[in-house]
Image (cartoon, rainbow, N blue to C red; front, side):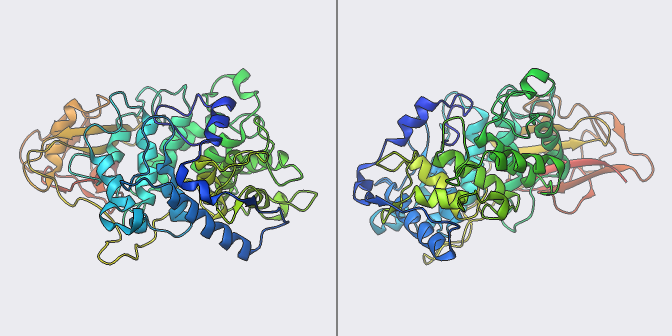
Length: 479
């Protein structure tokens, strides 16, 4: 199944998937030829060849202007997750060798544009952006002076249903929110948000696990009828990956149940029997779920009676030597989306990947804005945890007056944050002193308000605490 659209992934249908599978850019025409014959338990050499030729195909999808983002519908920007998984830096992908149009630079400019993603954005737009910006080597919280994708996602926190992002009925928005915040780490490789924030979404994902061990795109929590319905291969892969990205071990009962659900859907060819039949996208999502949880998709549990694994099936779906993957076994042309799903899975990744360092001279490991631009509106993600009530999470928009700001200025601006109610009262209300009370919870003995930035070391919260562009600001009350 293809990835999140610019509108929603909840409305994916067999018809739309078939339509996506038969659309091939002219540049890829020369990359057709015969598909690789299926063999049991793919060898390292076969996997290496699959990765190499898969990268070649995805490079052919780059437009002449250097872009991978298409207008409307599904977007080829998901290629960044597969390229990174296969060891190719987005900054090294150029149309005709023109480094001024390298894929990372062009994508960053697109994300930073005020009009992105659209006049009517949805939460999955920002989740897609976080996962792919990270894979492209762009710090998603520091895309530009006015673009912080992590804060954009925080604006969709559901205060009445803590842990959910966007309308809870579209459960996929919560799964991909957890994937984004758990998977897109800081430039130094550390978690960028407090574990308590991830834990809230982990709880939401757990509550939506169906009786058969899997998930689908709609909310099922609290609805016995929905929980008893059959699960979807694709969403099971994404949901189990989100749990593991959120810090859940693969020995956890929920992950084990998901693994067993997938194991029960394995057919002789090594494919998973999805509701759309055996196909690359469903197989890719399932394998990415296994990968994210450190479960071997070529282990004994995922080897069919015919000796075939999900990796065997994926490689059999790949054209040789063109490198593109077909959606259905009967297709005669590659699909861009199947090629992303297939390559990322074969390369061993979940739903994003740590970006490899560019080889191009002068290209930094990360593309990131380092300071606020005075007078240019900016956003920061804010998390408030008083230790007893549900978390308060919001996006704070303000206009900085310098290259850095202060915690006091952030808290003052949070009075009009999205969603509302993140910060109601602050003591002191002015000056630079220690925060002694927040939202009615006052310091008492050793229990005080502390602040950390990008899940770093917690320190005493003061109004004078320096805050930088892109920091995820977390306030926690306790000893």
